[in-house]
Length: 346
Image (tube, rainbow, N blue to C red; front, top):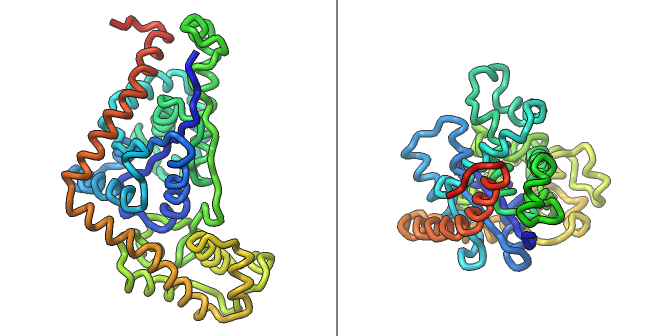
């Protein structure tokens, strides 16, 4: 029987600059979990090519995102940091569990419908099936917890369904392999926490902050300099009313709710405490304070990201080391999975 250890797996695509939403919604949790869990953090470059990527730009983006990981505080000595395509077991396992997953499950994935739009027949097969690859990423390491945003919860539920169905379909084979409890793949649990797990656009508080938004003013990139950070916050959309003094007053005011949540997450304070300090005042005063706070927190991250981007050989060495360590975990699982489904393993 495999020993189940508290293990975290998560990743981000190397497409576009990482931004404040990535930092508050994921990175802060990732960093904290390094001290409590065994952590595996991936640059999911195989997911990235579900939409065509320029090869030269993709290679650069893999370096850039890894540099941002390190600059934010991920420690390659504490965590495994690697890029997905260097570990072939991800793709092989995706095929095996793709034969366990069901078309109806994938048809319910709302993110495919949103990304493919009206012309879904022209979308890549990879875009349709990538939730299966995401499931392979997670369950291949027997991850117990996955820090995800609200928009990825459905994919994590799919990973749980696939793990459970595989365990059911191959129950006899799994027990014969020594797993007396019948559990080979561990159904992972979502890990969602923090006051700003869903950071919204600075230009529209009803839309998620996104790398793909055509307006650069909609997001704070982790590579933005101090002047740019301050400018974007001061230009952030607000409404004419003062900040409320209590959280109930944020209802129906998405921009005020978003900026208050950002301040709370960056400062480590509760939204109630932020409103107690700034409620009743004008947005201009609050925005100045938020700009100063954001510059203080994000400025050093941007500087370190740029320093690491200028040293790609070091970043590539981190990825090679991480890939070897990741493979050491997933390769035995993959070998056993081959045996469980009935393949001949030499």
